[in-house]
Image (cartoon, rainbow, N blue to C red; front, side, top):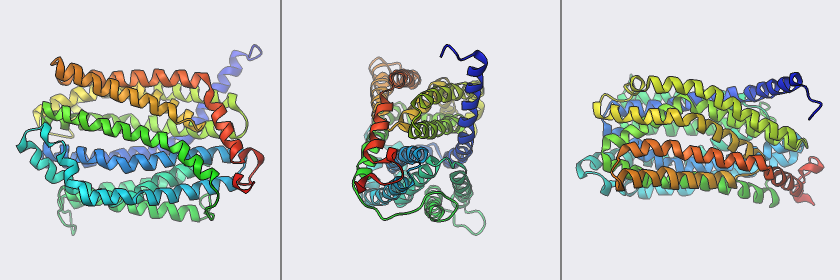
Length: 475
């Protein structure tokens, strides 16, 4: 370390930033369109009524359950794919990808059943926290929306798992192209089916859901075809052995539980907001969507880039490089996202008006948008540190940080200060910020201690990755 000059340190710093950005920008472009798709859903719903916005937002809580399952298995796939790519263990990599896709397809079936049997009850469960007149329209819109979305649960899983698997090889452009085309189609179909543009039927809120379900299915077919083609370095193999399958489960379950815990907390959190009024609940979804549209694509892109580079560095036997890359990517993410969020804070009310014309909703949504603008820098750091840890197969710590942040700070502060002490929606604004103050601090300490290096290395040894391309199950 003493022999490293400032000039060499600076060159190393910029070299890592360049590599991170090179992998991240296609993911950012893809995420911009994906978040624009979700933003379009809310804008279109807002043209119907605040109840339609709340319905789409509440149904989306349930719809994110299969999303979280797909992300969980996908993050396990990208961890193994990136590590095995770095080590040159292509047989292990193909086995991991094939098994992950099968798990995803089978795992989508229970969500389809849930959407068919419990769609109305799932939305109505929140009805006791709002006025009867307000919730009736929400249940009507939301239950139909949820039923249609859940039909595409297996496709949602395939999309995330296949994209993450390909990204783990260092190819972030192929997922960008596929998802970019699919999301652009989704946006056009949402407008067309909601309002009956041209020859398309006018389906209203149901059209928003139908466009998403069709687009997800088309994306899954495209990804499965891409993996089978020369476009991807991956290939399908006959599933066999239990070591890799076991590792996929071990890595993915905390990630799935992490997402599910946040979704579970969303139920009482949304219920509290509904008790303040349907306009407050709609405002929350609008304010969060604005952050997700403006800043989230960058943070997620950097998170994927850090995940891939940290995993590949571990596979190459360079834990020091993996550690340095994680911190450098975190700094890059917080710096660039911070500039965007300053703009979001200043122009919050102007941007909110693109989502709703209701003056009460505009006021509350502006508050939520500004709270997320402040929290966004912390969120950016959290996402990248979590991605770096996952590159080392460490998914338990992000789960713990999200559990505490969500239940103690987001939900706890909102309930105690908002309901018990009577500060109302202002407590929710504060809770959004405190949630990510804790998450970033907690994961920063975990990453600094480097125990994730030992975990990633031991799992690679177990499946035979560090011995070459042979599958560990053959021993």
